Image 1: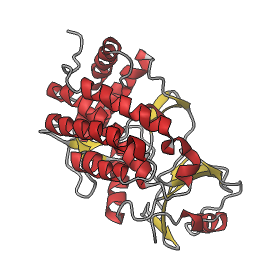
Image 2 (image 1 turned 90 degrees about the horizontal axis):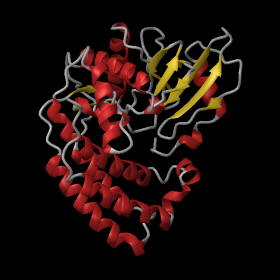
Image 3 (image 1 turned 45 degrees about the vertical axis):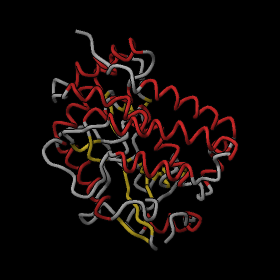
Image 4 (image 1 turned 60 degrees about the vertical axis):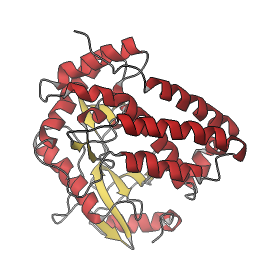
Length: 324
């Protein structure tokens, strides 16, 4: 099955897949905001709400998906509030007509407020609890946070993309090469753990008066700071205050090697480039031109040239520090 065969994922097939594991929807299927996978919310005949996720073909192996699920079960058993898939007959990964899928309880809630220091401290405790569990052993099948996939492969996908205007190709590729080179020089990792991997505000919810961590689809092996730095925003003074608040909660449950603070800007550069590479790689999926039409505009690429130049300067700045 090709990477871009979601057009075969019809509503009838989705319903048949769900019913094949003994769950019977009584409502319609509500598409949720997901582009990498296809995700739908529904209510079943037992009056419960569920979310079904159909995994993108050929992205993860069965072993990688099962390891993601096992990680979520391990965290839940340790009372870390994560949304884990539902098991049927002792399995959580199902297959129907070539599509692999998983079923989750539907969790409502309000979005995490990044500028709320009280919430940030609570999140620090939760990530600290998550990392205290994840340090017990390493992933065997999940990928690493590394420069090969986040920089080199992503750069190849970007530069080969038809969306990059020829008139801007030289200017963009020149600054891209400089950022990649400097990031590779600065991204030195001595210790890695199992990570959420994509811990941003959109994957954190306030539900039933507690934070709930969702979407472990990008869990990887990498430096602990990867699960913290995306919560920092604004100028350096604001980021220092936010980091101090996060770590105030985090270090109640887990220790952070403070030398990893020097990885924040390299990780930011890697995320910027990886995001562009992701869009370029997925462009054949009809959902991407439809929802990210700006990716093929001159204005977007002009903005990215400027953003990469700014990031190149940020890579030369001293590492962020917390208040004494």
